[in-house]
Length: 206
Image 1 (cartoon, rainbow, N blue to C red):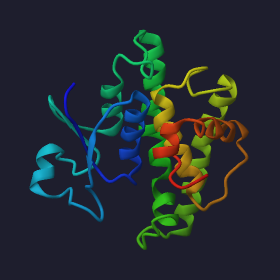
Image 2 (tube, helix red, strand yellow):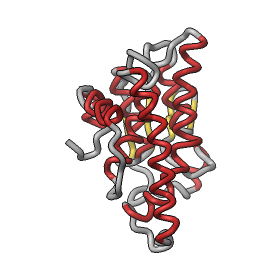
Image 3 (tube, rainbow, N blue to C red):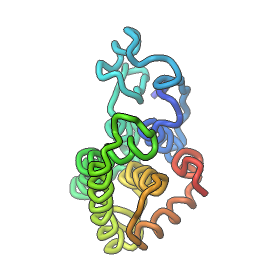
Image 4 (cartoon, one colour):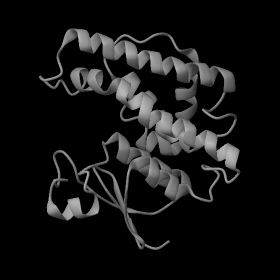
């Protein structure tokens, strides 16, 4: 693979997935700031690359690619982060898909209300319900990590840990009440030993 460009601001959780993946794989890239506060993703130039007007977008010699988890899979192809054996790969992708389809929707209202403080997201009942829903999804991750004793799919770090590690970071950053999940906290400390996480994952939390 030749040149590689990543479009998206470095503070975006989805951009950080891709940056952390590149760090783990020792892949070089050029990054351009796009998104809120930077170049507009609503511009015709950007919409030609991603009609959803979302970051990140990866551009390489083959063209443009969007959807952060898909970009991560693409970059990690034929690496230890994404196993080649079908069952092992399916387990990694199962947890990546769970992050995107189950965990992300659970935090959407509470995060926008409590962190971004959007005035349109200040219904107390919905905030409470959002926190409860978010914590209940994190309980699933707690159960899985307690069973594996290490990483999401077992003893070895994988692509699933990149996307879920960032989700754990977001959960910990949000000012709300959280249950005591010792396996999640031990997992977060384990991730903190990785240089790629320290660069792109912890987002200011020691």
